[in-house]
Image 1 (cartoon, helix red, strand yellow):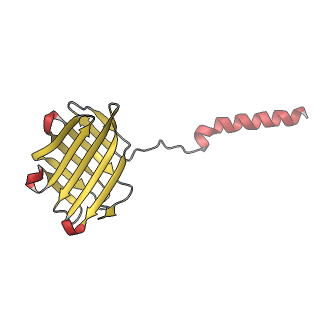
Image 2 (image 1 turned 60 degrees about the horizontal axis):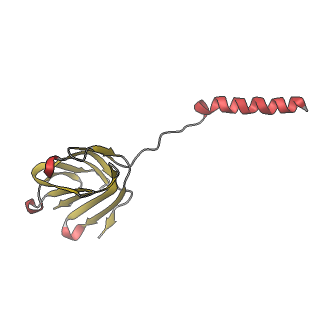
Image 3 (image 1 turned 45 degrees about the vertical axis):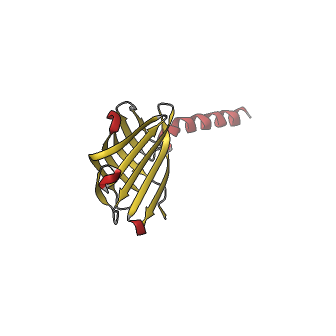
Length: 151
């Protein structure tokens, strides 16, 4: 009976020693990597998304919601004149190009003429941006939607 108990203890130790090598545990990857510099400095790596393509209006919208500095964050990327994935200039609403808007708590900032670029990847659900916003804010990084709705 003692031999059986010793065998069980040895098996438990063997499994415990093997765990770091025998199992694959990749760290959970966030669906975003957006770095903000300026008054609302910080990084978000996980967020909820709502993304919609409006083919009839030649528009695609990426809405990203998360938490930055313990405050609710809303980031909206809107591409006007969108027909296919690619790189788009970012400006103001009046420019008729891409527009980026940020709200963190009571802080608001939006893009202006010549603010940067947004790239929509070939899957039309992900991309990257490098954009200067009003009030000294800057956002750079990658975004991804779980799904792309059609409106």
